[in-house]
Length: 432
Image (cartoon, rainbow, N blue to C red; front, side, top):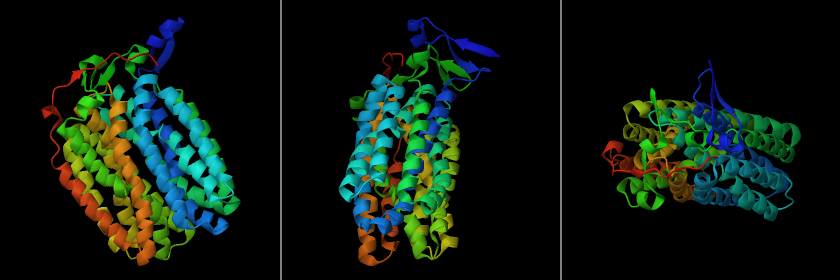
């Protein structure tokens, strides 16, 4: 059936907008666009470990210095996500994500052309974080606005873009580096990815209200005002916020260790460059499964229960990496880590939507990710220092397992969303 809706923004321009074909809920087009954005940004980011050895071998720059710049990059985009989330609530995702596409591409191109580490610092450490901050939080917060009862499922499909990139891109990046060198490979990935991200941003509408539609809630559709929502300041005063922030801060301290170091760890276990890169892909395979499983499972069995399962799996994964002796034992640990990481990241915006409502989801998710995600800058660099001091990765992975154990304990204290404090009405949203 051919369905036409008149959007709020289109009414002001006096035109009709065809937002759905064959009765497809327009929120799924937003999910598809967000999927593309996350595939692009995480495809390049998760290939960082593949680039490090090639960059160091070609330039002579110490790996520890490159890791430090990467730590600044992670800290920068995580902290700036608090800003991008708020801007998404105010300006809409198309402006925020589209601008981020241009800035992120520029940052990677500067790094690709860098003659020294100071220029790498400018490109990767200063410019790229601004663009990267306009990806995960704006995309996740926007999807939260479009769905209620199927929120977990929609976020699972959205964030699967990052996991699919994790599977596909690192081996491709390793092959491209072998063919063309790291500079040309990075430039090509940045340029193609930037165009795809910009195109996807054009399909990202702020929420159903911006098209004169209603939020999809299971088998019915409800207006956004039927959900109740907290402001950032109100949410930050709750026990739910403090627990979510604390457990994700613990998780993010160590979550990038495998992405950055498992490639090098695999080489110490005897793997060649391309096979070592497949260890990153193994994380992606697990991540894709974790996202697609955790989202629907959380819709059915409850967000709190699945969150605890996810952190428990992550603890087991780090313990497995600690005792891995070859690729045969590293692969299962990498897959399980990917599964748990994919699940926990998918559940974060869903938890925010459940506990605090969608009205200020961008700002609240941004606040949590801005603080907790900034902790991710510590882990990879600290791990590199531990590797330099001990000559192996086992201490770093063992300490990571201990940190996740604390996050697991915190997750056990999460209350049921239906028992949370009553929400305040959602403020009216403007057309995007």
